[in-house]
Image 1 (cartoon, rainbow, N blue to C red):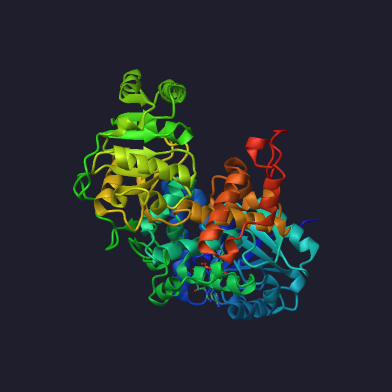
Image 2: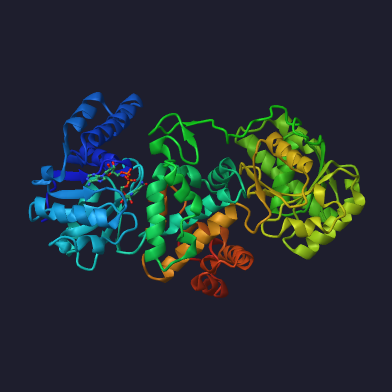
Amino acid sequence: MAREFTSVGVVGLGTMGAGIVEVFARNGIDVVAVEISAAAVERGRATLTGSTDRAVAKGKLAEADRDALLARVDWQVGLDALHSVDLVIEAVPEHLDLKQRIFAELDRVCKPEAILATNTSSLSVTEISVATTRPNQVIGIHFFNPAPVMKLVEVVRTVVTSADVVADVEALCERLGKVDVTISDRAGFIANALLFGYLNHAVSMFESRYATREDIDAAMKLGCGLPMGPLALMDLIGLDTAYEILDTMYRRGGRDRRHAPVPLIKQMVTAGLLGRKSGRGFYTYERPGSPVVVPDEHTPVTTGGALADGARAIAKVGIVGSGTMATGIIEVFAKAGYEVISVTRGAEKSAKVCEAVKTSLNKGVVRGKLSEEDRDAALGRVTWSATLDHLADVDLVVEAVVEELSVKKALFASLDEICKPGVVLATTTSSLPVIDVAMATQRPADVIGLHFFNPAPIMPLVEIVQTIRTSAETGATARAVCAALGKTGVVCGDRSGFIVNALLFPYLNDAVKMLEASYSTADDIDYAMKLGCGYPMGPFELLDVVGLDVSLAIQRELYLELREPGFAPAPLLEHLVTAGYLGRKSGRGFRDHTKR
Ligand SMILES: NC(=O)c1ccc[n+]([C@@H]2O[C@H](COP(=O)([O-])OP(=O)(O)OC[C@H]3O[C@@H](n4cnc5c(N)ncnc54)[C@H](O)[C@@H]3O)[C@@H](O)[C@H]2O)c1
């Protein structure tokens, strides 16, 4: 019969501990909440009351239930108070020696049958367990931040954790309304092993001024649908905790350079910029512990008028291409009131593109998002052509032809001859160096990347890629155009993958490597990222949607440009592509889509 947990102890009431107390107390379990000092206890208590008061204010918790919840918590200084609990969860800072000391003490204080659990994110549960005389009753229970919200719990069993302890803890997670994945003791478990390389990479982009903090975060939120950007997430996790996790993962996880903490993180920790908990990290917060970001000296100043910072006036836009992206981009510009000239390679292609734009606009009308007059006006703004010469007097050209450098270079050389001076020439390439395309013209200062996302009418993000030759006016014009289209334009340098793909694909590739190493299943890895990190899709779901061949090509480009050994494509990904398992489009990828 499963063990009854009537009372549990939580040690350390910081970012995670206070949330874990709430999880138990909400589910009718008595909690002994322990800290090192009375002041720290007060901080933990304030976090809990703050959180439950917010829940009451939002109508998610009745006042009487809040009072009952708070009455279940017994606040104490020192571990001695834990003598009669059935389970202890430790959530003190991520240092092995500290955790080992605490476990040795817990072993002495707690009753013999009590289970001792750690919330460590990256340390070895096995090494922590050997500090006790009961390693078979030691287990990892890894909650996600914020603990009351995130559904996932990673249950970490060591080689000596007894099977009934694992089963009892799994049953407890279910009682708490959590979804658990049970795994073995490896640095970073599932979610952090996939998350922290990405977070560290995002910090290095910020540190090298590749893009601003706002643009990096907006790119990942709007380009991938993540609940928050990587730098805002670092602030939520706490930079001191993130540093320790990266450092441990680097040492335990095969010295992958991608886990070597970016120097800026250590500097910020030393300077006391720990993130939300200290009121300042990558962003500045209203006060310590507050989630509300306030402007600081790095907050971009909005110029007000779109032309204020040297942007050129754009009225007439040429769009070259006849594929999915060109079709979507024509619609975006026409709806925003620009005069559009669509150029394809023949009347037949133009007719097809015109039909596709009409169909998409009609869908907008059916869904009530667009009036019939606006649809007709948008269509009326588009001229259909099969001759580049018609682009002689446009103000902006957006190229969206096939992703082949030779084709794009030839097109830009032609545009250079045809277009009037001062025109902004933009490429939508997602993987080629924009500078190569720019140098095919005599006017590289006017060339820029405008990387739209698919489907262009829906996705709110555009990456604005500036080469080392792009002029300030061209950049300002691109930003003004994105704003006029109602898109969020994020500015970045001309490096493989820009922001989104450079941060997204190595993570997907790492998930494939994790599956290949048989650490976990595709289902559990997908669960971990969705329920632990709030991602809209798990990595294998997303790979099957994007296409394994496309993902492999992007990953190869990243690897070739950056020569980062950790970016080498996962052999399993290569084999699946060779076998023709390309994802949804071929009926089979990581999953079989023919049966669903
Ligand atoms: N921050 C996250 O997003 C996150 C997510 C999951 C797991 N974790 C893990 O949870 C653990 C705690 O991390 P955190 O971010 O909550 O840290 P934190 O710094 O916010 O809180 C740690 C708390 O432990 C207290 N403490 C220190 N020594 C103590 C002792 N001897 N006895 C009792 N209390 C003591 C501190 O006073 C502090 O309040 C770490 O192992 C971390 O890796 C963190």
